[in-house]
Length: 174
Length: 187
Image 1 (cartoon, rainbow over the protein chains, first blue to last red):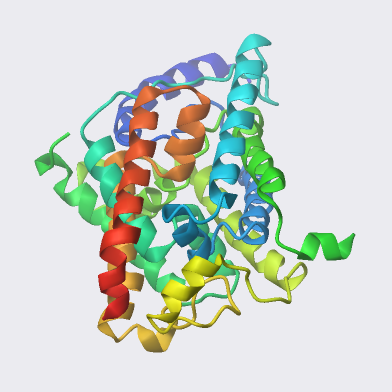
Image 2 (spheres, rainbow over the protein chains, first blue to last red; image 1 turned 120 degrees about the horizontal axis):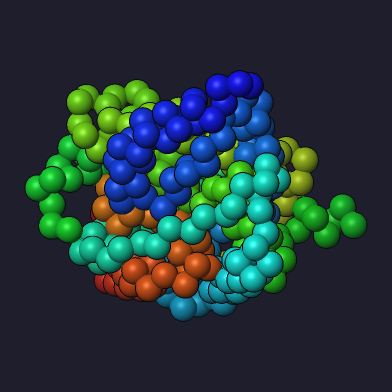
């Protein structure tokens, strides 16, 4: 308790370097300076469960739905992504407008993305993979849970792809 | 009521629920919604191999691994308690086209004619299950995010690089589904 401030300061200093690495090519960086016991992560498991159920029940994880989307044969996926973005935009606007804080009282931080060529080249590549496998990373996890065990192979391969990207990252155009 | 839940959920129920993930994660702990990063954390945890891109304290991002573990559990719950007993309803045009490639099984969310363990050894199965997955992993990290990180979180915070990425996802997918996939499916 007594040294809490000092500890926090040191923690920030050590973290800054680490955060720089973690921030590379990523959207979700944990910027919270709070340290929690492991069981605090259970709430993210719960959000994940809700999310996974929606994924399966709305058939977003279906290869067929993704094919329909890319062939303009169904509105379903456009409706899902579009309405999710609308709710997301409104939520973020409300959070900023009313300066809503986290349940721990921390200020909510948004970090701007900088543009690089990766968003174009990587984006096109991901589109290619998405159309073939019919799954983006989230659905891969839900598919495995839903009993499509062969998707474990797809997931492991995607992790391998991530690793290979990390290996060649410095040589790729950005 | 139960029947309503076991049926496929319409977009106007699913979309807003997915959108609510954005404020949920922010308010629960200042976390930006994103899924593909979890695969990077797995690399950092299991095989950092002295690559600077993986040399960071992955334990700080353990929430993200908890989140994707939850998604997996959600998948289990959805098929155990809330499963839809009927075949998936697919657009007739797509059915006609897929029948030409021998895809006729609509009992699961993914076509069992391709996504099964015994298809893995075939060229088609290898390209679609293994190579496709590899490209997803490589591409999302190169792009700095996937559908959740860019299309939903990025657009929700009105970031134009995420709009560029999202457009590229769609262009890549549309070109592939219409002009490349037919060749793969014909293998």
